[in-house]
Image 1 (tube, rainbow, N blue to C red):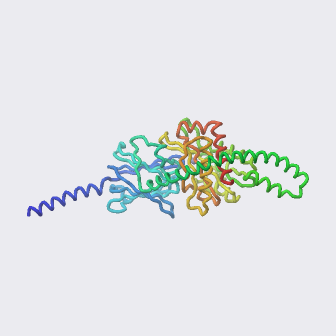
Image 2 (image 1 turned 120 degrees about the vertical axis):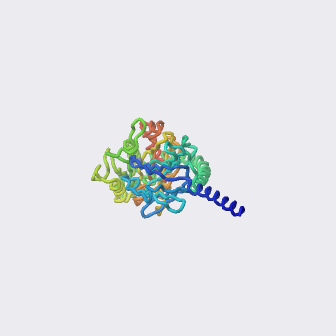
Image 3 (image 1 turned 30 degrees about the vertical axis):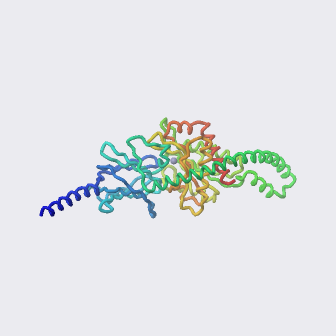
Length: 415
Ligand SMILES: [Zn+2]
């Protein structure tokens, strides 16, 4: 009898601790707020919790499984439409006995942060959209109380990072050798070019019946001649994009860099088409176009022309003003590996010129890289939310260097 009693007591105590473990937290509230092209979703919890992140297709969605968490009764099967280009819908459900599932319908990048002592207990902040703030913990050590947690996915990314760093090192070694070589080459090419320029002009006079050969010669010299390049300055018109601490607007930075880049590319003989050259939306419906219509209008420009490459230029932004650096994005599921190669070359060229830390070349679901038929990249120049980088992005020198860096990258890509 006593043994039986002790056994029940033991089981009872185990039961209590098991109960505590399996329901560490309750999800009490879901809040969201809109930025320009971004949505911030805040989950209020009664206790700390871990989560796992995954994605699914058709429609594109981001899934966040909160471990050992249950949904408060008032949030049971909660669902809301989100009025943003970044995300369409959010749903909350008790997925199984100890997992609460958050599903966000989105094609944009999703970044999750855990805040362990928010005013209302514990919070998980989910940023959907262009506020890329992930990986490279050395660059962006979140301030307390933000605690970055390592999910299995991130571990994989860290490994990849390590690998890519090693790759980069061996590439850099090679590159610095090559650099010297290519400088020498360039010099001799330049010499050759100016000689050939004179020569080809002379030729043109005498051999007007063979214009094709002269064109071919020029193509060999520049590598960009005859290439159709679509430049897409992000945002515009009523959509300012992100805004820096002193009020510099993303839409004007992207346009300034793009116009400068257009000049440089045209000088190299490229056929350059801008999705916009003024502070206006691209869609013929103007500011009354939906976000998707506006983005599709930009893709249409490149798709109709059957452009060789598409480059969408943006500036990054995040709530933590310390976030900084440049990121190249590409669409991972593209059938050709050229998007990634393009994103990588351009991001590298940019970082070398404006001296921003590299945040790497990353896959994304951004609409414009996903819905363009040619190798495409979306470039986040730097963080307009970072006071130092805002200054770079607002200076004449910074604009010129950024354009030069992108040009270097394009040359590298076609070279
Ligand atoms: Zn943007």
